[in-house]
Length: 138
Image (tube, rainbow, N blue to C red; front, top):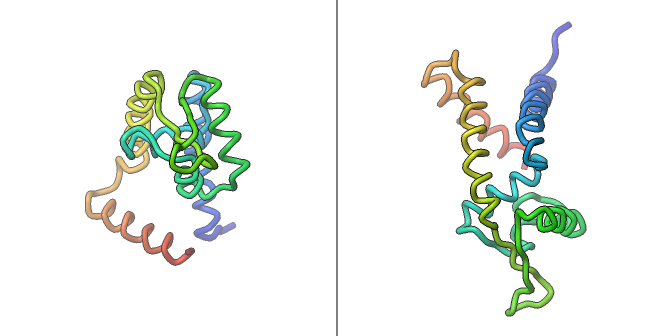
């Protein structure tokens, strides 16, 4: 039985998630939580809760829960934004900074595993094609 492109994307995504969940379990993190850590790391270590919400494209109650759990587990600290007390500033802790380095390494290793049989030209074409597909879905 032949499957379509969407099915292949789903299978690939599921395999990546299974591997990531296994790698992150020892830290007590989820993929969504690592996306928060990576986003903050790429933005100087802190951002508003609203910026994280927009980056993840999730609802306000969802991000409140994610940030709260991460703060309780020592990965983040938060405080009210003095310029807008309806929002919180979210910052990485020392604990999370060391985990971010490991996460980057895990992502790099996963990418290498996925792409090791492709040529540089194939990788470039794949990346360009995936960007087009993402844009088409907006």
